[in-house]
Image (cartoon, rainbow, N blue to C red; front, side, top):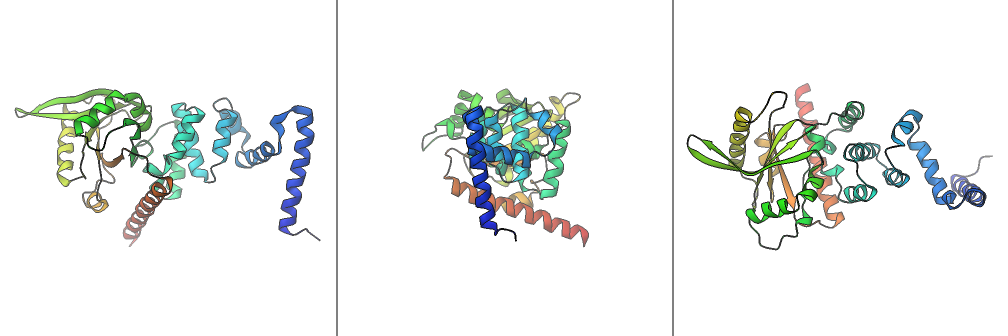
Length: 303
């Protein structure tokens, strides 16, 4: 007669502890019972030997321990790809997981089937998409801004700590210009920050707003993008993309202005990292809303 489930679990634990004791005597501390359970989980998660062979030189065992702690397969694959592409240390990986980087990407807000398809393309070709690259919100707690600051202060703080800014945005961003002056019909305009993203092969203009997003911000960004497309875009590059980085935004405005699937992104920035539970709740709500909207669109198409 088979043992009850709880007794089988206890029996399994005892077997692992006994085996760990024997292996530790023979091979050392690396074979304690905690690591043995990790070895079992590793074999369960990474069943494909070819995948293990391909990644074993890229990551340390400490990297793998952090990957194994992630229960969600899609999330794990996302962090593995980010780690591979950007060469994160184990400390950087831990920081990105703690800041809920995956949940802050547009990728996480797609249906699971589409997330899997996009990750598969990245794994096979290394080609990333905007949904993989851009985040919402951005965490700019490292800027050490005081309670009262201006857009110029924000811009200056970003440039003073450009390395950490790019770490938050992604390693493929290359800084090009600050307050880039353009002239249209004799009138001067200035783009706050101009970057180039290597893998997307796109110019990325960032417009900083101390306030909440307003509809007029879209028109301003469209003007910048059309100018860049006409005068700065070179052969082989994709269309420029605009990032409006603001203190807050209305999701209904974003939806009605159709900014959720275009070349203009509206994202919030946070100068302080909120408690994890607060950030988790906020992102969970955003993910559920985005997936519900996607489902409604699909139903409308099929009707």
